[in-house]
Image (cartoon, rainbow, N blue to C red; front, top):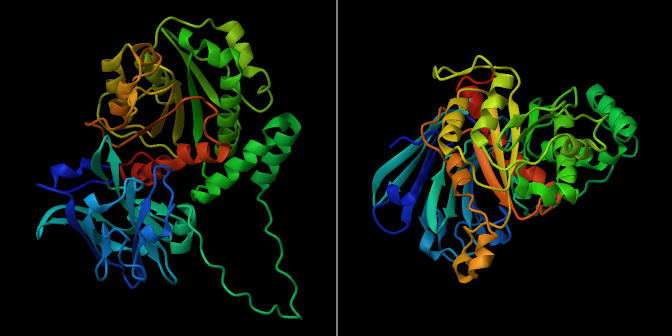
Length: 449
């Protein structure tokens, strides 16, 4: 079985019984020195226990669940892993000069009881200056182990990966500073960065901190200087009333505007509202950001229904009116990042599925965020009837995240109990997590030029 980049597969569909198998890397590095490693991460995608980083210098995890055997060969016995390990990420990193675009056709093979059951083929054509690669992820979902061929480039080498996953790297010993040489000059910000900082300081000083945090997050994700159009699609069904009246949605909208200010030179955030109908007010920007959401609530009444599909269709028509059902990719120089926020299930599931499939031929990435206590939590059945009534079933959004029949995986989903549940830094990491993996795949599939 060939596993495509971005494809998710249940491990039990590959392995006949148990959770013991081997991953074999067969690399044609083209002369590059490449190291493989496997990171055991907790539910927050962090390396909370550094003994669960498996590589040439630390070949076995404490539980024996992951072993590094020779060059590019990992043996797994997932039943041995403690419950604190929620996912395993297999990575490659260059040791020495070179970049990942120098990789020649290579493959990762899944082997069960000596028989190859699946393979994922890759090369450096999807990468540029990246020096590390998150190749594959094994993760638990609803008690089932799944496999995801990430294929995500990452700036920096092995040390940068360790830091990205929350680990620590020993600092090199400092060398005596030469007495005659002058200190290196401080880096000079680009003209666009200076222009943005001046605009924020003048037009929206309350966003200065957020814009700076977005800049740090983009740098960590290897997306400094990346350009995209950003749209915010807000649920205005009646159940969202408290979130708007309390100011929570206004604060959240500011956080998305900060992302738009970094992504788009004009600093505008396109806004769409949906309930039973779809509205498109004027864009939000730095100059009109104060009181913008309060103004929307005075002009647009909350509605009695929730229709994802209608909103998605309106967004697609806005950016790509020539889009449709012809199954041919539409290419653009600048992608569209859609932040789609809702607190409930849709009333047009069929249309929503049609829209996400058709949109997979367009350079649009859909980031869905559900607001509410999910009844998918493990202890939901232990709660009382009325407590469960207050929870939200986000199973359809989960379905859109993994929907089959798409040209490309063009969506991600996560849920929060409150819009401010995540810190600014953690929110931006969540918003960029799958987007940065989607970008090279979108180029490969003819959506970005």
